[in-house]
Length: 222
Length: 157
Image (tube, rainbow over all chains, first blue to last red):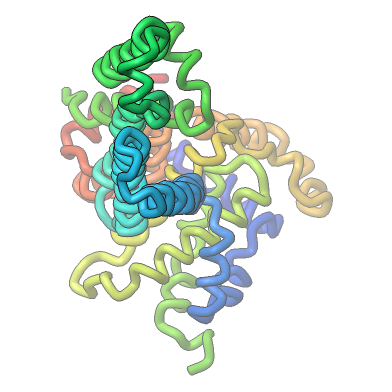
């Protein structure tokens, strides 16, 4: 089909849809005439969904960290293993909360006035950066099995060395292995899909695919 | 100042056809188009202070509108091509009556555009809006040569 014909058809089809008043942009523009109403609409924005999940994670993370800090403050290292384990878990969670806050700030700062390729790439890279938070959070797992340790138990009960300690050691090795292996190169593996079945993870894998598409689009020169 | 006299609202008014076309290309449902139009206007409003008058307004508008549209499209993932023209108001449908063949062609064009990937869709919209390769390249962020190559490939399809 000739270019001119294509352009005519494009204009005609859009004009007919416009005439049908499917979208009344005029009223839309006027209904958003004040900044206050725009702010209201912002709160309802579907695009805000990108950071909504992270905002929830931040809120839950802060509550969890406060609880952990209270536990440590209450114990004041009277029980060495308890306080140390909880403090380490708190530290990992503080890192995660801080990383999520940074992501939300960056998402809100993304400039839609840059070129399509640059803006979309930045947005997608931010989404993907969540993988680093998840990897690091796995490292806290063994500390959930050490908070009830005590020196007396270690010295007097053989079951500690036969059961408790091996379980913690196993978890420690597993968390290290996961830290090293949670990456996109393993995204297609069964263990990965079983472990990362959540909503955010699905969107991250989709984001990775999209990022590859952007790169391909950008570099696909004649 | 009455809202109608606000320079920003006037600019939106003057360019509403562009926004409309982008919404139509990226959304299959009328409700989604309304939402997307709102998102675009909101983002334009928020960024209006950063617009430099020595730059071309349409380039700025296209960047913002297409970026928002692509993000929205990815969020909602409603990739079904645009609504068929047969869904428009009965009065317009009656008016179209004898133009069945034209309507079919237009519907086909909208469907073909609707089926394109996010960036290809942006490319073809800008091309159909008769933007120069240079301006398309600026909006999308690739070279003008790449624009030409990609447009040829899309047209071949």
